[in-house]
Image 1 (tube, rainbow, N blue to C red):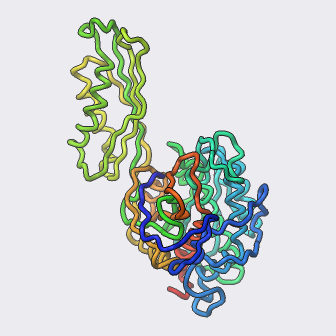
Image 2 (image 1 turned 180 degrees about the horizontal axis):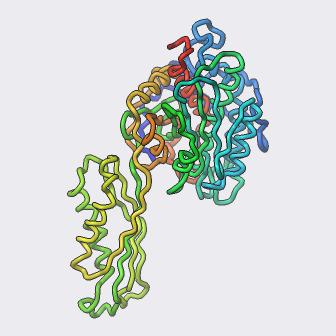
Image 3 (image 1 turned 180 degrees about the vertical axis):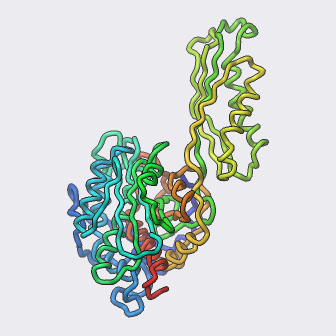
Length: 462
């Protein structure tokens, strides 16, 4: 998911190794503690006592005020398992897998959950779900995506991708680690306390490609009985410890458009005797975005951009075919539902005077992620428990995210998880040199634990 978020109100000094120093407000766990690299696949669900500071504010582990709460228990669990979480993430980062090919990632998740005493369920193909707790009420779900991108990593990290041409450049290794950490913390919590609430952790494949991922997981029954669903996405424009929230659309719809122009071809000295496809393509490129802004309310953030134009090979020959390829994005779900008809009608209107034949190939992508107001208020309360000074209002991104297919069916909310160290320029997603601050991992786990607390009928905070 793309984003454009400004991280302001910098209150922390972040040392070069990613650890937070001189913190006066916010969670100690917002510190990006970076333990030593774990070689190879780390042992599943190993409790590695690190002496790291817990990831949330409030009562310290063992305080009576937090006794029995999921958040307090998870704070202590994070204190003991920070190195383990880092090891999991680095294993996943070293071994990225493309969409629908996440066999090794799936096996690692299954092994880790099984070692924690849980009973994971493999989804058809790749991906995993696991339920923790018991109860007859609605299931509380958390989703983490597990696939990587087709990029050659150039970070120079000692745990950089070992797979040529594949990299976790969108933070899915961190998303997976956060949900995996939540599942394992809850498994340990349940051995000591009742958990009268079923929590389902969904490890979803293929978020980065059209037509798959979330829809396949939903078709496999992962939303059966779910009352609310939550997710997060790494945000390198926000400092580690900051959490971005928004009610309503937090992402945009993203569709792929292809326009194929054809004609008889001809000599450039006689364009009046043929259909000049290059001229027709130029008319589309210049007029279509303008007409779109006069047809659709510009406040909806509807944007058409062509990324590829192909046609012709000789300076003195009118080509017989020209292709244009691009994206149509909108922040309004109502615009998205009629976007194909609107786009096609405008294309045909522009091309008609040129005499070219036109074919529109329109691929529906994903609708905007619509954050439910009640679910977002739960996230806000949980985020305030992590750091009352770290909550930010997230702007709507023009990027697409298939978490939207879940929120089309059940109420849910996605948060933006700050993952910038505070040192140097803020990187962008989907870049081969992006480095995420691993200190955001315990913040994400603590956030989700707080959500469980707020929806957990037996929680002392209810």
